[in-house]
Image 1: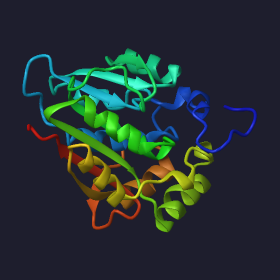
Image 2: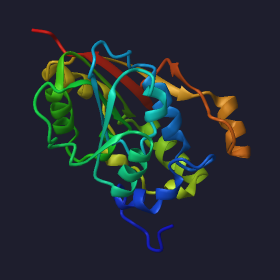
Image 3: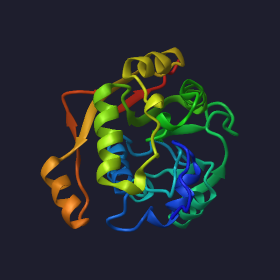
Length: 236
């Protein structure tokens, strides 16, 4: 664990938590639950050699949930300790800035951006890059935190009070308005639909006591806290 307090949204916090990516009951468990829910938005590959580019892949938490879908899974991140663990789970690691991807246009059948946009100073640049590398007909899937008072209260302040190890992971000033995200995606040729999601509350309450068993992420009526998006790039 870190010996000095880092600034909010300092990527080095993920090096401090490097041993927590895959540990049952870890403070990063929510990322695993969200990866499983995100994977349900990813269809099976439609062609041989299909590529899934996983932006902000971290320790590769998406990998077990897409392993049978037929993709070459490429993970992009700036955190070497995370990429090393992703590689151990079958992900092809790429050390790169998600705002400037080292890929040609149209190389990806799917681009995933899970719990990433709220960590990037220029999230519209990430959206533009994600859409650029998608093949026509390819899928963009993502999840992020909404830029609302409710999200800042529940997903930042309350989460940090309950799980002190994640204190400072999020900067409340960097959360992402879902309407602005939809506009940015559509402007780059990938209109998306968004829906709110949340952990199931009884399972979450049990997990907070026992730190055992995964918590299902389910749709909810509001995008005011946590939300998913999915859209398909036009073929014209």
